[in-house]
Amino acid sequence: MSHSCGRWDLEDHFRGKASAVRDAFNRLRALIEACGPVEMIPQKTRIVFLTRMRFAAAMPRVAWLDGHLNLAREIRDPRFTKVIRYGPATYTHSFRAHDASFFDTTFAAFVRESYLRGRQEHRST
Image 1: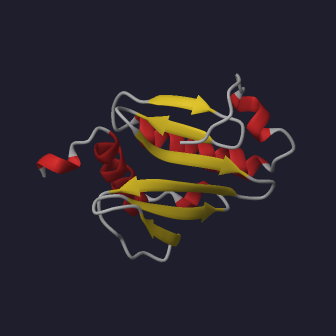
Image 2 (image 1 turned 45 degrees about the vertical axis):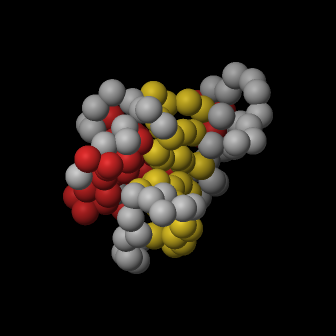
Image 3 (image 1 turned 30 degrees about the vertical axis):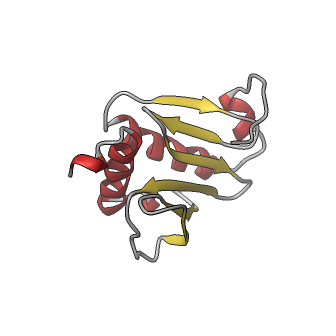
């Protein structure tokens, strides 16, 4: 997987961004951290979340938060702007949130499912 080596600071991602973008990220982060132990890694172009493997990412933009969840199945929901299949059990679901209200209880369930995918627990269900 390509990557850029270096140390990146979380605050760098939010410099010059609307406060609603940070609020949306904080809500997403809270939903992810409520699932269990997780590592958050700010990278050059995104912020990734991982357990055994990466399962979610966020990319703050000036006026919205782009991101994606990796799931073991395809979910058809209007909140997902794109779904890409990367093999028999990996579907990357892209989303765009303009504020924290995007991350409701239904989305929280998608986050939990993605977290289990990251822990590779989807194989036992």
